[in-house]
Length: 271
Image (cartoon, rainbow, N blue to C red; front, top):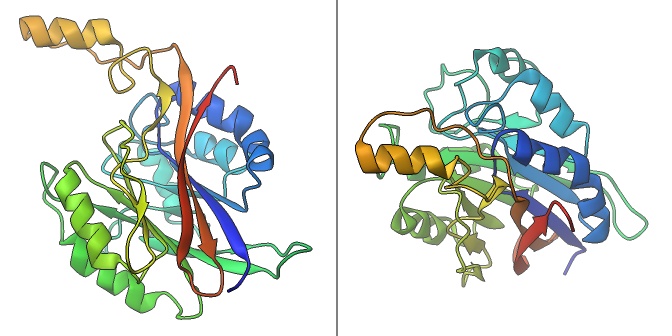
């Protein structure tokens, strides 16, 4: 058995409340939970939809190692400048067309410590197809991604941005034993099904939302209720209260890439 890497994946960062708690508290969370590597899904960080270069840089400069994106990856066209650059710390869904801006996976190095040498970690993102926009098969895209990741990179994290729990479970079983973790995002509601599958892959249907919980999946509940009751369209503005950071910590054996522990994390703004 090799050394253990503690990897936190942060659930969908929504609007200013979400990015504020992440940017202000990520370094503290790293220290408190003895984390080696932090991934954050930030596709909703800019006003609730998309990501800008300024927000991306603030997230990266304040304790996050890698940013993943989902179906709102291209809502803010300004992010294309980052996606098309040599910056390896951001990935968009790997089953987007090859002509799309950005990359679907990356490999980053975790610096050495007194206890262990430097270790490389692969991070990939995929989109689901059930109740989602038409997209290439995520299973086939996962195979292509794994074929390209160097075989000596054992620690592998997959952000599966999908709606249906059944599709997420399918991906977990499909990749069991081939990646360290398959962690679902997109629904903004954390599921209590975290587990380690028989092949050593940590799995959870959805790791939740980092943003305002005084609302409906991050949006003002009065706006959502008005449209639901009257069918009159309203702007679903981002809510503001009760900011929390949701995520999941996976402990990974650096020698085998297998998960040895998985636990949910809920961190409130006033913690």
